[in-house]
Amino acid sequence: MFDARRKVAEFNRAFRRPVNHQWTIPTIAERELLGKLLLEEVLEYCFKGLGLELHAKDMVGYAADNFELRHREGVKVDPIEVGDGLADVNVVIHFNAHWHGFNLDAATAHVHESNMSKLGLDGLPIINGESPGYREDEPGYDPTRPIGKILKGPNYWEPQAGLAQIVAQGSFPTSGIDPQIRFAVERARDQMQKYAQFIQKDAGLSLQGEAAQSDTELLEDAVLILSTME
Image (cartoon, rainbow, N blue to C red; front, side, top):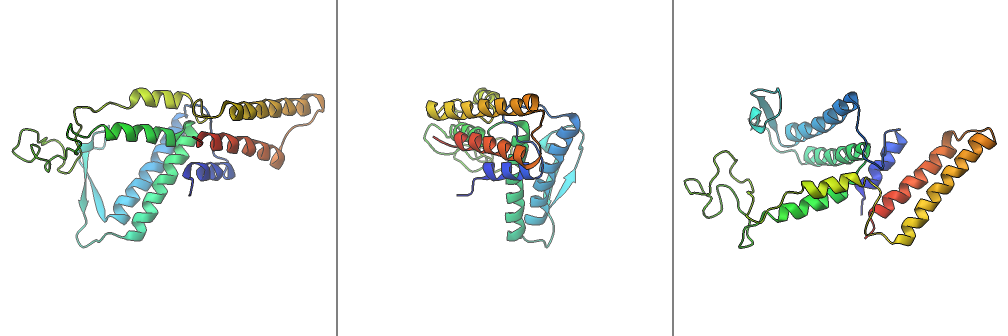
């Protein structure tokens, strides 16, 4: 199975982009870059893949009703561009998560559990404009939401508290991993740091080039492997 998180980390290292293991606050310039990268891929999926065009009402600030996507007359869905667009979005979100320094897979799993809590008491989804009691002219219908949007059931819980914990622990796992394995990796990291200090201070040399990169990649791979283990 293709592991997007690890593969994008490989890409980031190859192109000298960050693979942070703890939450990192990007600079303003970096924030603008990360936002533009993701927005560009999302819009390409909409424009080239779905054949839509953007109509802006007021692009200052953020609100979903500040703009709308409309079908371009005569333009069909392009399956290749859909695949390319969504694949690029998947790459960029992992690229951004590595830059920020948190485990996107863990965050996605937690949000999934939150999303599943949106089911109604009968275990069925509540679809605006479609589900019984939520059709147009029925009490549950929300005219401010698009028809077809999934609405929140009575047992829905917000994911923010759990996400705060996931982000705080960074990419390195703190639970669900064999303590002996975690200890071995942490010990290896400590030994690598001592080895680097010995070379730099006692031997008067410095770790540079491919050797330093190899050690860094070894540690990062170990961290990424551990974070995907149950």
